[in-house]
Length: 312
Image (tube, rainbow, N blue to C red; front, side):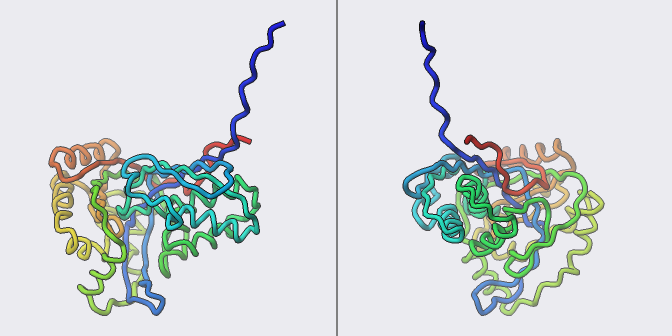
């Protein structure tokens, strides 16, 4: 009798995807005593994703693949490894984990790729280690890790206050379509905020009433009204540090974008299209004009960090 070899069981792994974001509005107030600026922002999660695969390991290690992977640190300064360490400490466990990050969100591009890695790691390690923490517990840990991490965990569309970490879900109807002009050169968020301070001196406290037209556009699912309401207080500071960003902004406007804005602290430029097809037209304009190192298209809003597969 011939025995058929049995394939080894798959190693336990948890695969999680978390989205990048675009700030539909970003209003920046004065620097607080803790060094952070008070902000009022409206986030939208878009279909450009980070993927994190967590597998058991003796230690906590990390590898990276995808565009600009060589720019991502793999030591303890990486936000994903910090997320794993924080979760282990909070859950009272000392398990190791190997994390593999596959990059889809631009590195240092103003779309919260590192925050998405951290959010995905919290979800992945929570499932791998069976910590049993609630979503509110994970959101609390996310806020300790960084201002954008809670939104990367929550996704969809939300208003952020405080450092951006205090979230209120926002009603949004329909789907919005984007083209992104991505630069291989990054911009430091800290340097952009410092340039903002130099340009504006003492900033005023953000007023969420300024975004009433934007919120109405989201509720109505009106891309034209949303495009007209896009706003970023950091855009002039990003342009001060990287004057070349004026080119993709102009190309998108010339190509008929409903609205165009630097995403977060930059340097990614986000252009809003009338439809999926129009977003492709905007992307083609970026490519043809040579004003971007890479071009992405995406739709939003999408869900936050979620398990997409798990083997046990």
